[in-house]
Image 1 (cartoon, rainbow, N blue to C red):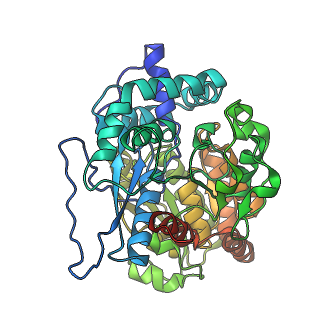
Image 2 (cartoon, rainbow, N blue to C red):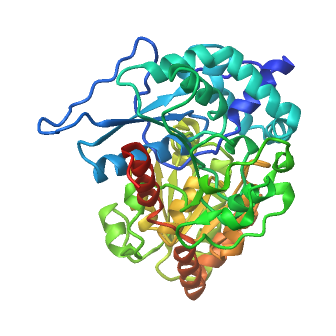
Image 3 (tube, rainbow, N blue to C red):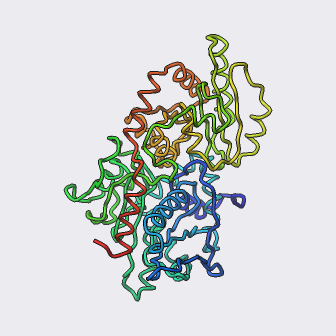
Length: 476
């Protein structure tokens, strides 16, 4: 991504904030080429024996964090697997594809704001107020409706549009209505990719379906006026969560009309295919496959695809704490796997760092087999990204949350705590002490692993995909 531009001008800063207010990402999602309009054209191999033209589902996302793309890819794979030859999907990074400033810089702006939580909190709260919501709708609609129309008119024209980003609801829907002659005829769905708390822009009254992952976001829909007796959870709800109003953001009580109740559907958060088995992994086999010692307690430290956060300090403190335990107590020792993503500086610094006896350390860059690494681990240290938490729960992996974005991810901390499979520590020494204590407590880790699996919704991706397929295929 291009370097972030200066944030001195208030208008640009507000737009950047609104563009960044999406869920930060799942770890290890491999980027794929993004369609750029109007020059880009889609090419696809159609089944030779198909009796009808496949229905096209177009996913709109933005790379403000990896979770939006990862969720769209997971749903794309599920739809095409469930209905080969009948449904085909493509993805559009909508803001980048417009080619317009400042919108095309939103991914870079997101990274700047994620490294400056005070700025994130300020603009998240401003963007959640009625004036902030109105400003977003007005500016985006006036600036980008023609570009959105080009994206939605590009061939093959979509038969359904699915948004997996909070800022891609109203303006794309109005662009789709323009293409349909003034009144939208093709279905439009929203899949919310936040978990314990969410920005109010996720919820739009005119979507045909709004998929929410948790009780907290179901409650947010209720706080915005959806009748309680008509909010449906087609599967058992996720782990109970009593979210404080502060976590849901001031926009929870904004005057926007509520999402019509029959459209609110709760399955869980879409996660990638490798995490969806729902069974306890064989850790020894998983470690052997990765070249790790099958008998050693394993800690996985991740910083996201871009290696953001105080990754170097946290990983170093964890290694030192486990080394001190090994020196004091003896035993087989432990091993730490650090995934630095694209943070080459952190990787080089950790590679050069002295390592205490009794701890094996493996430093890695960007990986595309995060499911295998989670399967091999006993403890995960991560920022409070919703996709990572959902994937860890599916793998039965206890979590130490090292940071969260104010407003956006506060509810994720509550989700993990109340479900009983993790804790939050905000400083590297505190994280290291907690990890070392957990590594000494085998029965405690087993209890947390069971709690994680109880909170997981490993089949949510397939359930959402089946509902989307019914919508686009016109099946009851």
